[in-house]
Amino acid sequence: MSNFVQKALLYATQQRKNIFIKKTRNALSSQEQFLINLLHFHKNTELGQEYLFNNITTIEQFQQRIPIWEYSNYEPYIQRMAQGERNILTPDPVVYFNTTSGSTGKQKLIPVTQHFQSTLRRANLTSIGFLDTALRSRSLKFGKLLVTNTANITGRTTSGIAYGPGGTGVMRMNKMLYQQLFAHPYTLLEVSDSMSRHYLCLLFALRDASMRGIIANFPMLVLRTCQYLERYAEDLIQDLEFGEIASWLKLEPEIRNALEKQFFAAPSRAAQLNSILKTNGKLTPKLAWSNLSFIATARGGTSNFYFERFPDHLEDTPVFGAVYASAEGTFSIYSDLNTDGSILALESGFFEFVPQDQWEEAQPKTLLATEVKVGEFYRILMTNYSGLYRYDNGDVIEVVGFYNKTPLITFRYRRGGLLSSTTEKTTESHATQVMQALQQEFGVALEDFCITLTENDFPAHYLVNIELISDRPLSNPQAFLARFDQKLQEINVYYGAKRQDQVPPPRLRILVPGSFAIIRQRQLQKGIPDSQLKFPHISEDRNFLSGLVVEQEVRLPED
Image (cartoon, rainbow, N blue to C red; front, side, top):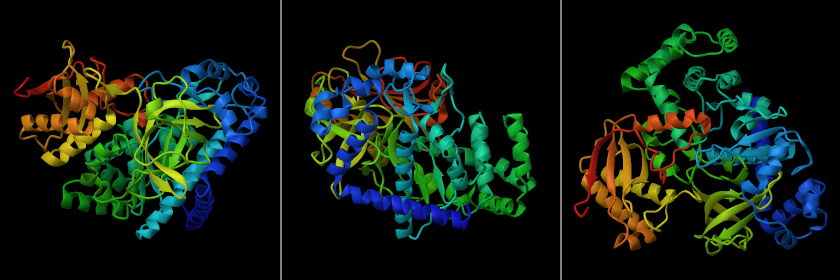
């Protein structure tokens, strides 16, 4: 990215950020204006005519007339759109379908239109504006980026509309912008084989010692990139020295031909990296790119569990959440580094919040952005230009503060992802908080974990399935299990109450190395794209970890 292009981009992002900040000072009017404009634009669609969008002039009228729907309600409409029918949910044509990961249920198709894509782009540019400001306040710089997501679509509908991960759609529709930002050719993201794609992105990025950022959808994927760099360090350095594309990489012939014309030897950089490798015994991103300024990846939810391992590879490199988004749209925008709170994305959707005492209601009463309270948990509803109205995707957020008059929110967990031996409702957020605390308390590093239930007991025992990192043993497994039990009782008060006489004691299972790699491979084989790979840390599926080898099972004395 030339200095001129970078300056122009950052100037544009600062302008977008300033416009957004102005709107945060008057969140209610910003939200109402967004909603009225959207309804006016969609008034002649099939759904718009059914619900008389043309004479809705207030938020109250909208809430009274439009029901709260989940994906199952929209699916018949979206299936018709996938077959090529127009003007169903949106007036402008569908140019792409975002797919959900399918890791927590059936994969969904979310319509993407030019208007919807514009809101995504606006939020992304705003987040870069905030990132640039945050970096400069710490004497750091924005610059070239390492990205390893696939740019390949998953397939096409019967009418020929492409579908695939949301990130793929964003990159394909903004290719000219992103190819300016990457520290490697955009072509590399079209390599189908995941490991080969990662290797080549690292190889080309290693040429540039001044690279500034690494981006991945989830922290687990950042760690995977770090592991690839360490595992293939010698091969990468050798390829740099001789200017070769390794023959063992699985590449489409046309891509290999194109890359061989672009890649050439960098012996001085190879010598520098080789010296770093010999001195340190490994090659990490922070060692390879001493000017690395930030990591951009998802925050909230289970992220903090993985962040415990970031210093081993990335030292004190700050982490930026960018945007909190899903296939359905963007919910919020991060304004600073190393923080979980993000500003409600006022320009990306109209948002409503379902308080906890309304969660069991079919059509719950909702609160607006200005009515929520700090410290409370809510289900968040979205209305946006993908044609979703008062849409409930099951995300549960916590309000952690306010930015001017606009709430700061943090994703906590996906509703429906609950674990109960009886009725105690342990969430993924509960489990992650416990395991994060235990890693610190016992000085142990976990490759991953998943809490399941015993198969033939009622009430069932919690099974705490963990995989240790090979050089970080657990010296006292029984104490670890006892503290898990105590800590979960503190964090989940319902577990604490029912643990006294209803929920039996938990059990610890230490799995052999490589166990969770097997589970991730199973997920990939189900068709989940590697860039959308999320690992559930609680599961009521008694067969989720079937076939894995248990190295040691530990029980409490009372069991």
